[in-house]
Image (tube, rainbow, N blue to C red):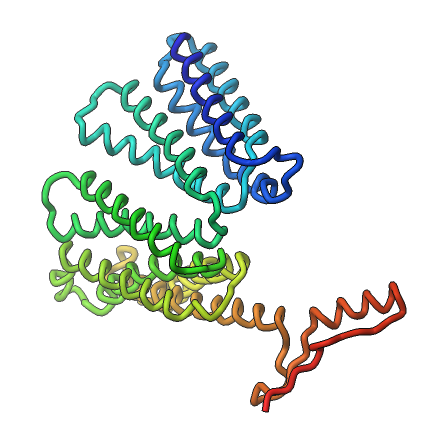
Length: 369
């Protein structure tokens, strides 16, 4: 029980320090914008924290264990309402909370910790510390900058795993931790030099993941049963790593001129996933029927169809997102993109006329020579 009390006090102190980081949430509108997102996304994180806390205490009485889990989860969820949070802080604190728990578990593995309670304590402490650090780090960031930082963190973790796959030298955990550190450093530097919207950062994340998966999927689809041996672990890992880095470079070069909204970024990711399912499903329907189930030919067709479908879905999502952004700013009416009507100004002018009986619409129509 003393361990429970000390842990709850520590969590309360962290919440209090976060509260001091900003103005009173009831008086500062800027500190309220991310609250709903933070509270909702903190619910599953609180449940995981509570599970780790129970693993630390290891109550022998089942009734005490259930009560401890429910009380700690409810307290953490309720406490999240008291923290003033911007959208950037909401995203980065939650993202680093999850990754911090995995980092703590990895450190326990590297340090040779065998006790289950000690492992849970390391993961819990690392998760809480990482969440607080992400909250502090995101001060002054936009939501897009925070999203880009977490994206590069994930890319670093992925890159560390792929580097281990190219070498197969011992335990992969140190490679993952090293990649995470490199990703955090690279992401911090990139977010300082790039002013991305949240949608743009989401597109970079989706493109980076797809860039890692697409080369491997296409190689497997084209290799055939006699050429599968060429697709060994080192080759697949190297191809995925190069594909991910190339996709990140392309995404940053391409998306900078298109200020995608968060909805546009979600559309790109969602349509990429939908395209993978559609492509894989169509490939399965046209694949030859094997007497003993799905044979290698069918598997290659499904993987190839899913890969092409994901790429096509991402392209379709980007096209729709760019079109939506263009319609928000103004709609070009002529094929050569010379005449445009700004619908935002038109709607605002209509409301102004209805209120004051005065119509003023500067910049409503634009013509480019």
